[in-house]
Amino acid sequence: MNHVLVIGSLNMDFDVYTSHRPEPGETVMGKSMKMVPGGKGANQAYALARMNVKTAMIGAVGDDPFGQMLIHNLQTAGVDTSSIRLSSQETGKAFIEIDEQGQNYITVIAGANHDLDETLLLDHLDLFEQADAIVMQLEIPLPIVCQAAKLCRQKGKLLILDPAPAVKDLPTDLFPLVDIAKPNETELSILTGMPTNTREEIVSAAKKLHAMGVKNVMVTLGGKGTLLVQDSGIREFPAYPVKAVDTTAAGDCFLASFLSQFDGQDFSAAIDFGAKAAAIAVTRPGAQSSIPSYEEVCRFSPQSR
Ligand code: RIB
Image 1 (spheres, rainbow, N blue to C red):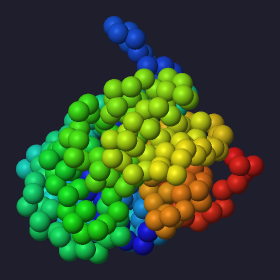
Image 2 (image 1 turned 90 degrees about the vertical axis):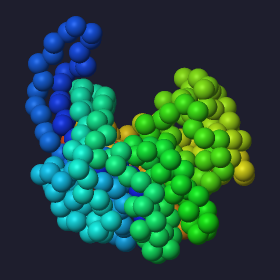
Image 3 (image 1 turned 90 degrees about the horizontal axis):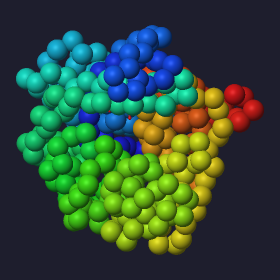
Image 4 (image 1 turned 60 degrees about the vertical axis):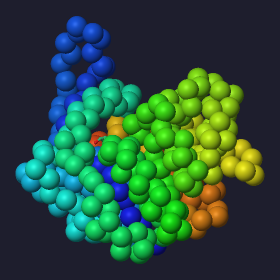
């Protein structure tokens, strides 16, 4: 894709690295703490721009120092931030614990991310026109996601939905508007109400999401790769084994890198490129700070790690 519009969230991430996640009532001594630009929407926009895709973002931050830092970081990658609203609410924040396996546990305070409305979409219809594809997640108000999805269909654009954080009972008329959904196993389970503990269960749940109307269901399985369910059948793609230090934003990096190479037809090469980018991202701390450049992904080889 040459030109992508991301409609989504921007958060300042507060990352705490610990040996393990505290049990209820337990106090754990953290190893270190970092403040890093994040937010699923902003991470995806940042990664798209790093992959040389012309990228614009619709979103909202507070009129505060965190908001300025988030906008500035997107600009350094080349994202068009002119349609990011300065809200009277505080910039969104995410509190992230990362354990020794690199696993992350995220709590988001939406703040300004919930200050998106129809006007902001209608004021930027030109961005819908210019884009080849539109990417959304679920950290912004659901009615805006649904409305943007309808606009996307009216304008004949490809819609990619990262259904995160997943919510039960999404409006059923949203699914047939989605060209590609990228849930992980947990999100897939929430969306479909089905278990996803085994490969068979994941396949059944992905088939259900496909039957609900999503054209292409691309389930990310971390170190186990990616499962793709389409009309033409089921395919599996491997991940690249690496030692993860922080998996935050790996899914965002995968999605954006995949899309940067996707021509609307060939999933295989684009998924492989996404898997390489994600394999690099998990070896680095933080959200946007972990996202590689296009050249780094091209240079990646399994032996180079
Ligand atoms: O996908 C990772 C992101 O989720 C973090 O950057 C955090 O801000 C939350 O939105």
